[in-house]
Length: 486
Image (cartoon, rainbow, N blue to C red; front, side):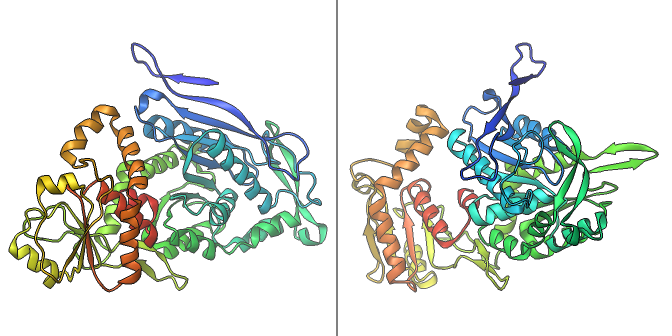
């Protein structure tokens, strides 16, 4: 284990690293060994309430877990964002096991995806970490996106460095190395990272063909529809026509994609200027860390939310605060590549209606068309704050969570913060998932039985109980988890 420290009068490690050996799943095409990786952990003092989120860092063809930007990125993620990361060697690469029992097909795409399943399982079950993002390089991106589409579409952030969109063009690399690669059963590649050295390795034709077959348009569309965002980082001086692949990702994904081109950089983000080798990998790290920062994630979410439709989420209702329409958020992309949005003017949320004015009551029905109001306050809160009057055209449904408790913000906020801050809120909201089941059922049954009758949900502040219920509604509609949380 390696501990790195700063120059504080009482030095504390900024992050720690340890080599990990991850068993591969059985039955396996490897007999002996394991998948070798490096787990980088942020220092505990970085964040008093660590979210325990991890970034999976994936290398490409002929590489290993410490080439290009991978090691530098792991350190920056820990120091600057407080994120864990795991970078590893695919089997047949670096220090990991040999692939021997797959009929001589080599390191196929299926083998890469199997390794990703094992590594992701290790992060989740052994390390108890949630995968926030996958960073892939070149061939590793094809494997990562294939893995995500088939096994983990809930991962919100996918980062593509120097990868193909037109996977079939991978055959060109084999043909350039050996024009008779198909007849000869493969080609020889030099400089492949193996056992801490560089080796000349035979690449079977079956391995190349497996990488050339994925339909990246379909895979990327499925992931975007599930809510994923993409960052694409390419060297403008990459060999062949990789920049055209970058454009293909950008054109397909639109607002769900951020493109960064690094002038003069090649496929591995190096360049030769004035007869000197220039390393642009720190720039790659800077782009990725900035893009994954909470501030940037929040800004992208706000930007997408503001420009969804010509429509305002916030509504004016006389005598009521925190009143909004929860519709309009992106719920993915259809098979025809049409962007879909959550329905507007149907579900509303707010704080208590105890000060609702006569004009406000008229607006509820005449302007917003609301026919039912779900009041989540406890009986104690209703007795204390009063029950508002409504016209006969609007039905109030009293559906408290824990009916014998005062869950108003004034009664709970100070106690929650004193009990443990953010962690206490997590416990509180998790509890709401149990105590609020009756209310959840009533609201979902209304949606099922009265899809054309707009309704309002509120508690006292319109923040905690209302927020948990609204989160369930957003998730059910297809809004991605990160957007729901924000």
